[in-house]
Length: 138
Image 1 (tube, rainbow, N blue to C red):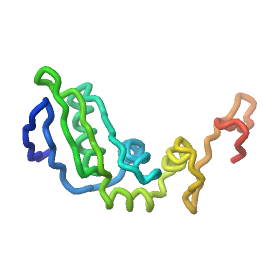
Image 2 (image 1 turned 180 degrees about the vertical axis):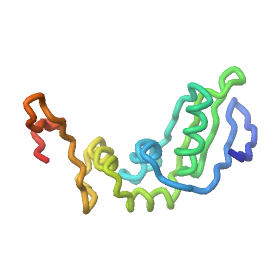
Image 3 (image 1 turned 45 degrees about the vertical axis):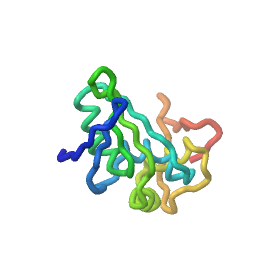
């Protein structure tokens, strides 16, 4: 990823991320709170390895205006992201992924996609359907 970085004091490095290329479930999960509640939330994701760093910086970070890489003992420890971009809010509103229904349920919102077809069901050994969400009929 072609990052343009500026080292700041206090073990933080401001990252200039590129434009939003796409919306996937990883990004949807981590920025949903900001999109649903319309508040500026700080999202802090730990960097466990090179793969997690790449996923955070490529999939999640482009959806935020402010992205900072946090260091501890000269090693990247986590990524702080805040100020959801307007384009990310628009992508969230237009999203029709079945995963969005799950995310909306996590935030206990009544908003549901117009063409919601998501059903959280599994079959029992007898072949009947069992709802994963007790009391909810799908």
